[in-house]
Length: 252
Ligand code: GAR
Image (cartoon, rainbow, N blue to C red; front, side, top):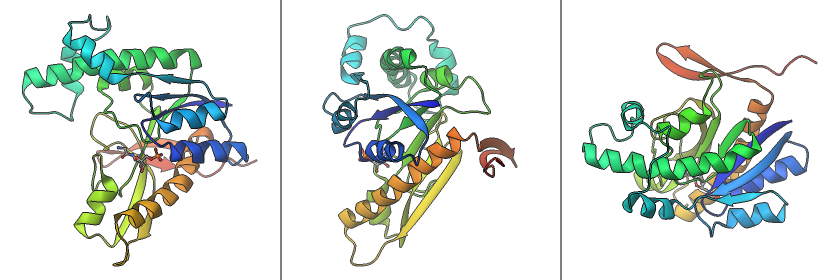
């Protein structure tokens, strides 16, 4: 059975949807562990209740250690990671250096926490930290089979960032949606696996939009993880862009 790890920063309603799908047999994977950057994430409680091992990688503690001059991970090369980084292209070199070094400290701890579980896929379910090429390259050892999947609360490539539903609502969009994609070096820019949309009525406030969106997420995310588990996602090059091809179910 395929093993997944799940990272959460907050409420973990997507984690719950994944756990529920596994519990009813709609999703055939083992949730090997749940981790968080936030010791108070409600998602950790949900996992513990279900008997799933949890861990916390406290980013702020690692950032503080960086300030104190903590040694960087041995396999970290600023030059390599900076050259792959696309999120902060064009920013001040000192700022970029601090951004990448601080995160490398936290990400090395995250990798160490994940290692014993030998996961096939890492699922970001409301994980609100940027992952740098240092972390991504450690997991993505096969370029045709990315191993990090994220859910984003907007119809990408519209509204990347941390407030997808808010941005959608404030723009006055008449549809909103969510996107599951593989994680690459950019901001919410990796190959799209699945999307789901919903209408936004004039009577909807932001809360209503979020409610509709989350309901779509809870269906879409387990479905996409299931496609991965069935080995039905193929990353292919199409006119210069890496896109996901969804293969038909294997004939039985
Ligand atoms: C979800 O809406 C998810 O799409 C979003 O955070 C929420 C987490 O909810 N993720 C991002 O914005 C990622 N940048 P949950 O903790 O209840 O699953």
